[in-house]
Length: 158
Picture 1 (cartoon, rainbow, N blue to C red):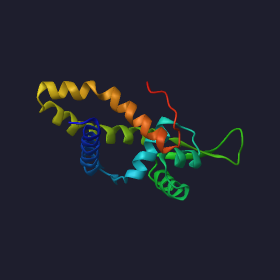
Picture 2: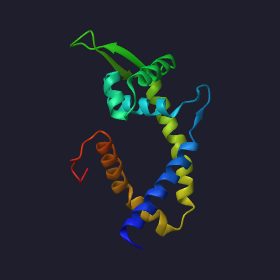
Picture 3: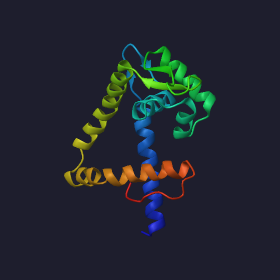
Picture 4: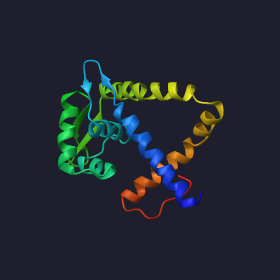
């Protein structure tokens, strides 16, 4: 199989895998389903606490009004809070709450559990290959984000 067709096959498999995982979006007791945009925002706020709405929108490739609306929902659920910047009171920062961190962890675990179960059911050589590919897949994810943000140059070892 040629390199272009192997890369296409990889892209197809990753797309289908992503869709399968996405469809299994967890619904948490007492919270209900959390839309994908809100999940992505909560993770971004946890990863980069103190971001502005504009920074969150840029990091996730979303429109600022959509991020503002989703942040209002996350605030309403008690997952994040908005605070004025100590350096400039006109700037609003978004920070995770303990409830938001706990919910994010519970959601991450509810996604990870079926993946672990599926991995356990694979042949040992397939499981080992997938586990070995984790770093490379993380680098691919970083590269896709860089390209999305318009960064043509990125350290290939990321």
